[in-house]
Image 1 (tube, one colour):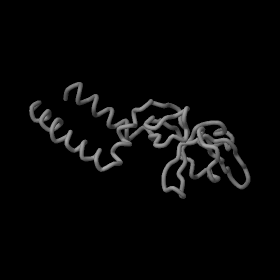
Image 2 (image 1 turned 90 degrees about the vertical axis):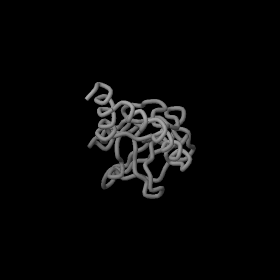
Image 3 (image 1 turned 30 degrees about the vertical axis):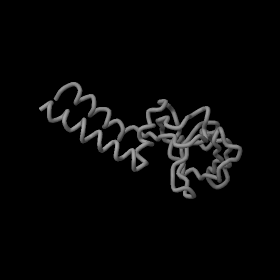
Image 4 (image 1 turned 60 degrees about the vertical axis):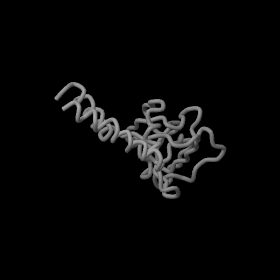
Length: 143
């Protein structure tokens, strides 16, 4: 196995081991932009540890993960967080601690933009075409 194969394998494995998400809306601008890849760690056990931090939570309203900032905390029968996008004028509905997935610790600008493009049928066709026209012939020629 060559060094190139090893490097590709390490990158692919890290995508499954390191928890990450991609910013898919403009609600966190200018802090985060669409396409930024964010790396996260699990939320702390202390209720107040998230205040002011950008975190990710699951929204049962939108059936999706949201990357917003924690702006307030209520500690009545468990932690209840108030999130808000930096560019939004209104805050999100209350979020219980169990719905918080992680806290953003590192941002890689625009690296996640490619994964956002996979959400459209046209991008999927372009990707399939790229694999058929470039990747497969390169693999066969390398053998």
